[in-house]
Image (cartoon, rainbow, N blue to C red; front, side):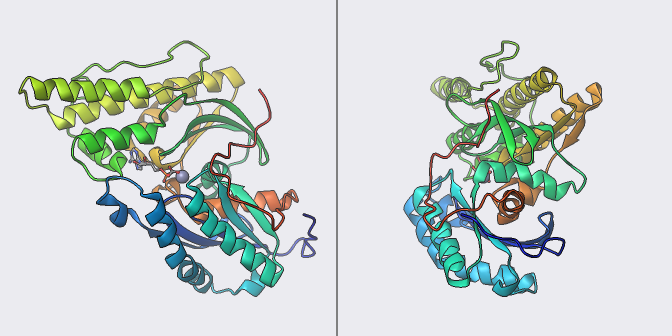
Length: 349
Ligand code: KG4
Ligand code: ZN
């Protein structure tokens, strides 16, 4: 849809909404990279008793919280809808019912107040969290996106041009963290639990296999590793041997982190970049950050990661992506719909 930005040169305000999974979030950004407000209402305590996100409950919670969260984002940013230049909203990937709440809210506001609408890809939003934490960061760079649902290596060539180098064939890294933590009796989400526990364990205590180790293979597979850890726990239990939870956590985490770092460094050499970023919930992992930093220091590469609150789901990152799309004139029509299986907008290798 064509909209005219008639305030060129003046400040641009973006209102953003994120409801793809279990966080209801709204944010206001100034000129795309300055966060005026970033309100996140988490549903984690509600889903914890079920051991994972229950889609129907998530949708209902989003309906209840989306307007108060949006209102607080505007109040905290000291602005009103009259100040907003465009509305960014996540339209995929994610849970369809959850996405629809954000999309319907954004469309209603866009229609009622005649504010241009920008449909944002959630995974692209994760990558753009790095622009908020690093004011001087500019493309090109390589981004490892690791979340609860995705594991992807993306060459960010420009603000609007991405090349997907490889992704997981089966489980996402975060999914493996969550599943293993759950079997070990830790609450959802399991990633932060494993991260904490691993600090007290021996990462070389147990050998777990790595998949797809060939050079220049940028695909991932974590289902074999997940099964290997579950088999180990099961075997120990059957033999009546108590396992050391911290050692299991540390050994599992090291296997994931080594795989992520090795493939990222291989991809950086392959595309010839010296700038590496990480994004998504798993990028908050302390061992991943330390190991990637170490690998980048050895090669003389720059390493970027978002601050913890911008690693997990939030609307500020969606606002940043929406701003750059708006600059490129990539607005959405009011027919915008939720796309649960949306993939990154890529150009081929
Ligand atoms: O990006 P995100 O908030 O939601 C999705 O888009 O999926 O990612 C959530 C995932 C969960 O699997 C969670 O366990 C994982 O990120 N996670 C972590 C850590 N913090 C969150 N995984 C490992 N270590 C962490 N510190
Ligand atoms: Zn996410």
